[in-house]
Image 1 (tube, rainbow, N blue to C red):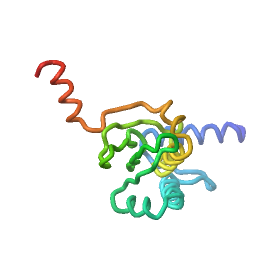
Image 2 (image 1 turned 180 degrees about the vertical axis):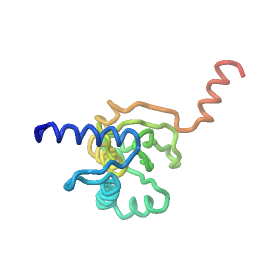
Image 3 (image 1 turned 120 degrees about the horizontal axis):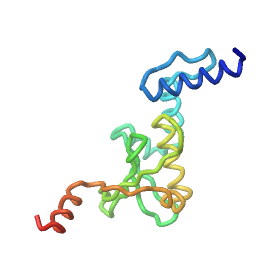
Image 4 (image 1 turned 30 degrees about the horizontal axis):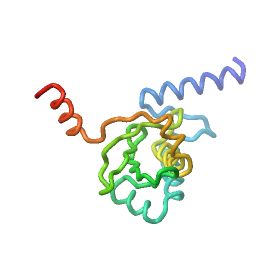
Length: 148
């Protein structure tokens, strides 16, 4: 078996383990998933303002201001369906789902979302998929339409 074949097999095994939620035994120079998670959160915290950092440590979320329209968004801990547009009173009313490609730790995804909203809000919203932030609104809308 060639060195390239060994490397391909190692990567294939690592991806299979990640999809299965198992911590595969990495190569000597590879980063373990737990280490990647800690490094991702350390990097995220370096990029947060003091107010955002305090909010994140208290509530596992932080608010950002969009670069285009000045809308406020809340990024919650997670990798998908974790960005919420806030109303004027600071309440989430619409969710947006967008993230970088690949299997990335939550800290890296959240940092990418923060940077996207703060530097290219319009571009982020072009690829974002909306979802209902508050289910009671959806339920009332369905009830109003179906006469329930």
